[in-house]
Image (cartoon, rainbow, N blue to C red; front, side):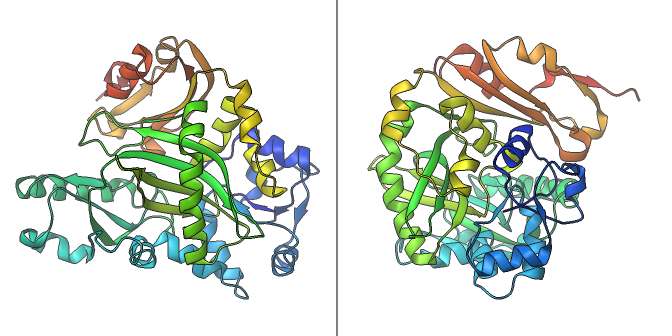
Length: 391
């Protein structure tokens, strides 16, 4: 069964719900996407009964549903598991004995202006202890950078604080942690009813520079799946054991260093990639429906799936506002000019930049991550695509 909520539900997910008759929990939000007779809508009471009796696995397309779960589900440890992962301090504490030398520190919003920088290891990352979508994530390279970072944090808090509920994004508390070296990856996976990890996709998160902490570019390929499937599965076994997980979908972010050590960054509970991004990418890349695999507790036969891989990379390009221009001053975004620069566009999603602070999302296929079209968009500030609002 599934809890649907804002900000976005893709057509692919809606088609999956209809095709496989996946039960949709009745909430105040579902009329936005579900028409009468198009899905098996079940009451709150029926949903809770099915969860308690372990009849249906639960999935949320959006962390906005966390509030509903916390208010209504009280008979299992589900809410505790969600809070464990949503709070980055609690998550780091959970895995402390597995990574005893890893530095992290909690700091309240009130403490930020008087932070004692002398005791901190530069460079470091600071981000909300409860966050989403790289909002409020900053890399601080030196003490001299801190005043500028602090000023930018204040601006971003005012911009983003009303977009997501407090359970999803909160700036009352922050975590400071050391910079994790290595390549960054995003994993869509679930822990099945036998408490075994099932990987549905592995995507590499590529940055434009060492100082970049944004979400511009993720890609998957047969080569990535073959190279990292085994070691990521081993890490997920440890995670599932530490947190005592079962029938639990999640979007995991981690880094793998030059020694092959897997170091976690965060776990996003009860969902795959936000805004129906990475789960839909698996369909374009490999022809597998990750929603179907999770709801029916199926495991991909990666050996055979990868035999038909086309050798290309399949990517998500997040059109976050890197123009340096306030969204209120931007009139429009030229999507037509953007998409002609790509050889193969699977899908373009347009979003209201004044409401969500980013322009949209592209799903594309390319020869490799070093191709001209990828490098251009990775390093672009997107100014060439915007039109300014008249004064």
